[in-house]
Image 1: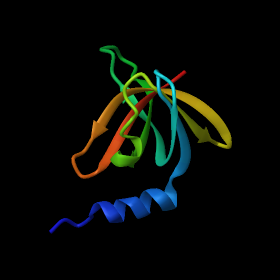
Image 2 (image 1 turned 30 degrees about the horizontal axis):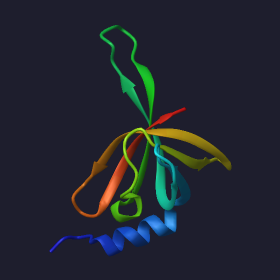
Image 3 (image 1 turned 90 degrees about the vertical axis):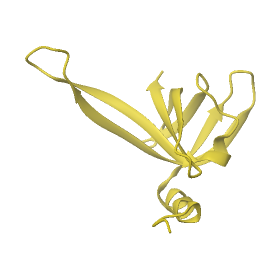
Length: 105
């Protein structure tokens, strides 16, 4: 038996998520709730000094974003300001939750 089920994750996303709006390349939009994370990672380019790379991501319920695809845009409230991102990678985890890797526009 899994420790978490989709119902648990839906509650977590609803409680800690923000309202986002996705705009499809072909037209149309979808509003959904997601958890925004802008983790920084140190990258080693083969030199002596590593540099920080921003890795913005959204974690959301897969069925809420089924019409979104790579290349579509998402507006996310960051520190009270709507910020636009392009979806670069759609990563469903097989449990009903999808992570979207974003690139700031």
